[in-house]
Length: 164
Image (cartoon, rainbow, N blue to C red; front, side, top):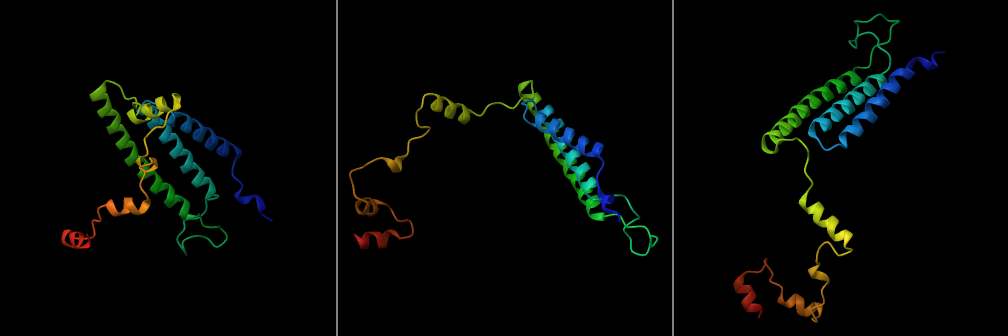
C-alpha cells in the first residue's frame, strides 16, 4: 500500500510558505524594486507549489517510452510551471521598465499617493461626504415633471417638437 507516495516534503512546504510570505510582505512596499522582488518571490513560490502538487518525478510522459513498472510524471504541472515562468519574465521586464522610467522622471522609484485617495481621506477625516450626489437633492418637482424636462436622445428633434 503506497498511501504516502505523493506526500510532499516538509522542507518544500516550508520553503513555499516562506517564499510566499516574504513575497507578499515585499509586494506591500512602496518602492517598485521591492514590489518586483516580492512578485518574483511569490511567482517562485507558486512554481514550486505546482511542482510539488504534481507529485514525484517519474518516467517521461511519452506513451511507450517508459518501463511498465515505473509511473509516468505528470506533464500538466511542468507545463503550467513553464507558462508561469514565461509570464513572470514578461511582467518582470515591464516592472523594471516602470521603475527605470520612474527613476528618470522623479529620481526615485516609489509609487506616489493618488491625489483622489488623499482627497477622500481628508473628507473622511472631516466626516464630510466625499462627493455631492445631484440625484439626492430635492428639487421640489415630481418625478413626472422631471421626466418631462429630460432630453431623450433616441427621439429625433422633429419628433420631440411634434410631441410638444
